[in-house]
Length: 514
Image (cartoon, rainbow, N blue to C red; front, side):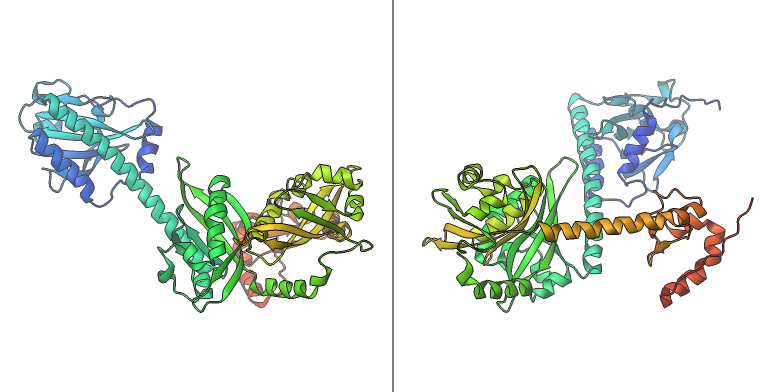
């Protein structure tokens, strides 16, 4: 097409620029006061009747804010002055468009709005792309002063920050909506807190367990609903650990209901960060273990006289002076690991966690610190320890603080170690049996498949996958329509839905064509 004016060239990174623009999710949005204020200031400072925030799309320039062009929301890109302005880094200024060969016959010059003077400063995002301009327009020749140029540049910076801030706000709103929907659609107890410990969201399941409404807890500190011991642990240990590690699992906390009941829980949390890595909030799940711990405490009380186990039992005993770090163990404790007493005491060096398998160490530390800090009635954990011969054995460790000082600080603790390798190995055998069953199903010619209520595959043997021409390694998680194809899926859907409702098996009609 031949033009009587000169359209702007397109940058070699145009595709990436348009992607950056559309990531703002601002095109065709409603007017907003923050952007309207920027163009009003630009118009006043530059002493011109028209000012725009123009965003340059693939085929148009669209105005997020305007003053002086009522009723005009966009123009074609090929006649846009702003399409020229985004190609540079500085203010693009045309003092008299009627005398400029690039614009003299531009429809925006020869007809409304009869542009003679134009000055536009690129709106550059933090990604480095110019998505539009903050521009000023006059119907007579003009030229910006140095002060006006500086103010226009700063207003363009403000527009860029406002656009990116708007995007962040929209994303946060979407996340909050998703979080709210997730919270209220699950029976699990959930909450999220901000980095300062303030409750950002909470679902009805957790709030009602504590005897409150959600709105009563929102905005309050989570520690307000904890026992003093748990609140102290959360502030000094729990929250700092979450902020540094980004993930914690099954950390014991005690909450207090409106009626004063203490609720024992295990809290697991994951930290959410923004694009720059700054923590925004945490998502937490809460397991109510009150009844379980009550039973365990009753059992511990019944076995109080067995805490200091004597020689001749089938348990290894240990004692630790938390002040001096001195360790004492019996011979069975050492023999469990293939050592003599002096060697294993030296290896432990006042801290048995030193010999715990690295994958188990975090949960052992959590249970240990919770009891040492007075949050649980006793310490108990299962973990792996390497035998002197090189293999790993499973240990059940139980213990209890014997003395505390006047301030509640633990002074010593003692307990037992039991070798539970046989039980844990039995679990491994069961898991291997399940694996063998899957291999067996893959070996038989009959078709075996399992689809959940959402018609997504949870298991299919090789014969099943081969019959449909699907890679066995990829079928899990696929929707049944992807496997059957549109026609076969449509044919079988009524029967699938009916059988799901009845809980019966389904036989699919399949016709090979070839």
